[in-house]
Length: 157
Length: 283
Image 1 (cartoon, rainbow over the protein chains, first blue to last red):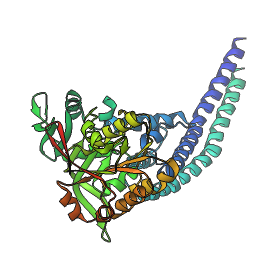
Image 2: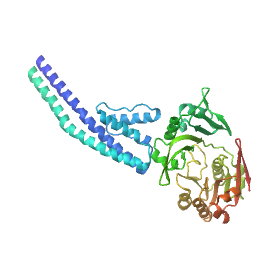
Image 3: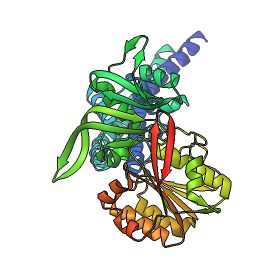
Image 4: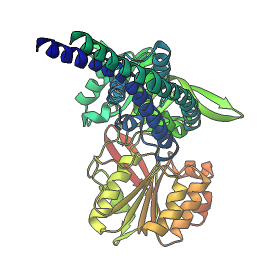
């Protein structure tokens, strides 16, 4: 009886760890998806509605960590604090995002438009890479977790 | 009210808040002591007993904050050397012009700012009102005054007085977001269009908003003059202001000559300001 309970626990833990680790890829994908949506919204803000950057930062998107980034950017505009970036971004991505947010609102509409279009390409490439990683590494890690859990279950029983 | 001054650093925000209602102007120059015009008198700005000396970075931060960190919205006015904030505050900017093919692209390396705060002085235009109103009819009038003498403050109060006393439909053409702010009372019969050229105001809004009186600040071009003529010949009363010390100054500028030759204006009012008192003279 004890063995069965331990086996079930091992299966649940291993599968859970696998699913949790694979979540990183889903979150990365959602983060860049939200970033691209923001970029598109801000493009139309600059070219049509001409709302302020602050009101653009007040919008909310699917990814919670991206929303936290927008809130931290709004705070940065007020008191110069640092941006709040999720830890699943690599160094290159982090630098790109810091540089992107640093450029927002600091030039005329034509220049802003060029900057936003350039970054749309950059972020689209990263998003497509994230999608590949989500479909490959994410699924692989999830499956590995479940398989290891099953093996642990069999051994324990 | 405090949110009006969010664009200022804490030391200046505190000084302005302390002098609220009495401060007309704040002058900031890079690495020089800041000064403020308090009730017509220039004083050094102090914070906790020390003179406030803004750095280039401070001035740059004020400009970006005043632009709501959205330079794409303000570059057109920045090119003309000023930023008009939505709450009636106007910032004149000194710095280095970036020029391409003879046109100013923008201003950079900001070195000085002249921040002008708009005030509403209820009743300051009573005398002007009695000059422009003849037997209940508002005459086409031109208010002439040097910069800083209170043209905008008088026009704002005049709009309120006309609205309250005659109940006529007034259109305020507020090109530089100076005349109108939600903080001010302009009466119940005023329509305001801001941010557009006077040209648009005179030609389009006459058709769409059907005003009986148009009030516009700071005429400065032949286009503005054509707008005045169009309005005056469309049966709309026009009250405008222009920079100058005398009617001769206005004539010498030339751009209003066509309106003057066609007798578009019936009243010319010379405005002066000593301290915080306005004096007006019909000429």
